[in-house]
Image 1 (tube, rainbow, N blue to C red):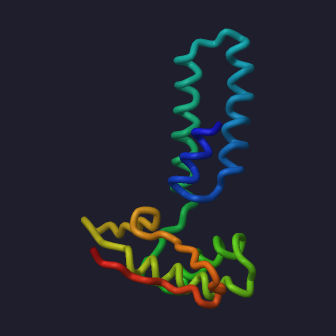
Image 2 (tube, rainbow, N blue to C red):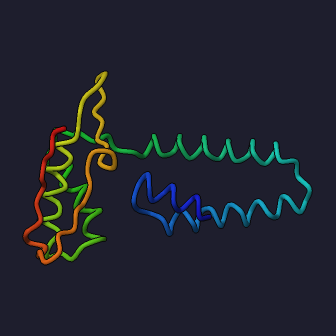
Image 3 (cartoon, rainbow, N blue to C red):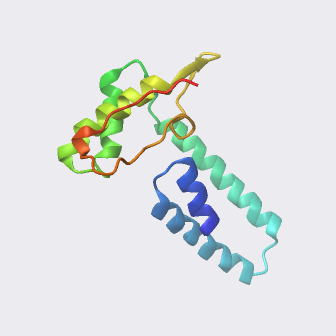
Length: 140
């Protein structure tokens, strides 16, 4: 569970509780099959099939993101930030996040990549207030 939560935190930086609950439920279900002496390869095959089904379903219900559509991006960012920050500062946080996305995105082979974890970091400035927050760019 520790590795699952650490990986989730490193890759997404959100959803840690959800992924631990999901992993716990998967282990709980697997325990029943292990008690029935089901072969591990059968269990692995079933998990792979379930994964394939989930990916297929997610592809059907997903919505493409137009990274040139500012309103769409701000809506996505706001839906995330509004669960993390006070509504007083969510507008400021959304605008900073939007600026960060625009700063770090790059296009390669007709795909836009936005890797916030790789190209950004949050610095806490002692003595500062939230309203002083801003995006600072550094080009190495």
